[in-house]
Length: 359
Ligand SMILES: Nc1ncnc2c1ncn2[C@@H]1O[C@H](COP(=O)(O)OP(=O)(O)O)[C@@H](O)[C@H]1O
Ligand SMILES: [Mg+2]
View (cartoon, rainbow, N blue to C red):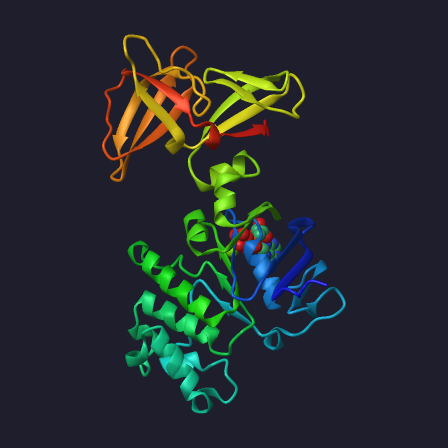
């Protein structure tokens, strides 16, 4: 027997008007782990959170906390007895209560019975001197910290967070995310955080649950999702990508950048060869001579600069191959602004290329 996960969701299904908004979703989160439900708007993330919280009900599937059944289609523990905390996008602080009473709200007996816990959390989120302030007297970032302290005060076994940083000023977000993450790690609760921003998921998550149209299409550590995406859309969700198409012939696919191994795909089928802009190699043209092919980078293809732009940390250079006119983007650290029309040789870092059957 394996030890039960802090939160385990099994085969969750939820339909609205016969449309399956959550379509057979299963995952587990351990204590101390932050899992991010990541996906485009409308893919079913908040619905999963609401079912786990107990404010919506699944059509089928079960939820367990520490091995104990929380709900299935017959049995249901009410939301307030699930030991599951929730933090919303708009923070939902009580406007008529001072900060200390807001933080104590979920504790039996309130502030009077739990002065130490409230003081500890206010100190931890650096809001002690605001304990008697009212929510409207606080900035967005300060309200976020109070909402977080309130959600953690009763020591929930699982904390659910629905887009908790989206209302905050872009410039403050990274700092607030990092502060939030260190507090969550100190508290050791299991966290299920919803976001549609890949950068946020990469920054916060131990485990990313990548969703599309009601299903989890891939789950794993940020490194795995970024470096071993399951399909072209998964790759494209995390960054801009270049896509070359080709046709399989005898377990190989030929392209202007040399042959790629495409084993297991039927002869004549179409494949997509995907590479991120930072993984193109660029070489100058020396009187029509390109670099020799290597196992690391394959064959070089001649291309011409279409447009080059400086983006601050890096430059973005758009190319068209010559001939064939395949469009490709490359990013280069720092300033690199070759004039339009400049001939250059492009190579693809073979260890950074993903090959998918055409979807
Ligand atoms: N109570 C509801 N009644 C009908 N449709 C709903 C309801 N709640 C959510 N939906 C629909 O389910 C889909 C997923 O919604 P949601 O889980 O909020 O997505 P996300 O949080 O990923 O943006 C959307 O198409 C939404 O319109
Ligand atoms: Mg949502």
